[in-house]
Image 1 (cartoon, rainbow, N blue to C red):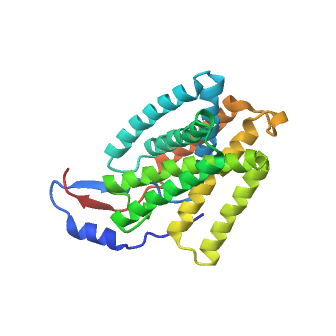
Image 2: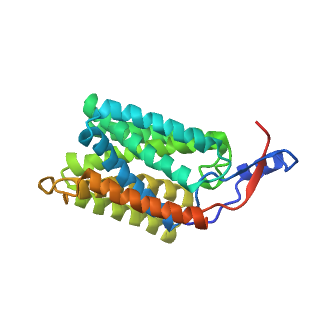
Length: 280
């Protein structure tokens, strides 16, 4: 879904012209994967793990919401440090960052609602505004929101900030529909799946541009995965299947590991050409 060709943007052209290839120049490949079916499958799996792993660490292991948030934030910062230092897309490193940012995004939303008593309606609006602000700053700086040209530290910074707020927004929106609106986990999952299908139809049938289609779908996959995770892990009396957070997290982590290992070997989702950037 939403696999599209890389457009020749003015920003990419200006970068190439400004930094011609030369001896000693630092080569930097696109730092994110191509948008293929593997991308979307792993993304949904990661969002599910983000929901169930946050519950597992917080409740089952007794770390508490604050301690869990601190531990996961430190792990995410460390992983992003290695991600930013990498010169190309590394499947294992990239998807580890996505799993951790999924957990942290969930915890950010949960902290606001559980520890500070902020209403889900409020957190949903706030995270939506913050996400729009990131996109506005990104576009004002780079003149593009395309993920096909994440080749500079600044663009990668905007990219991961946007990813964090999509997870936080998706968590709040998913909880709002499943719990506050009392739709239930399964109905919520179907609702968000239908919305994603509508975005796909708008992209392929009505000419919705690839970049907004991608980001809308990216936001919607978060509550989809969270609803699936809750449906599988929560007790039957609460509307779930009763698999528990341990079992659900283990199943999805194994699936993620298998797919990422496959992509590491085959490089089927790796981007193509590189661009020369100045040292430092």
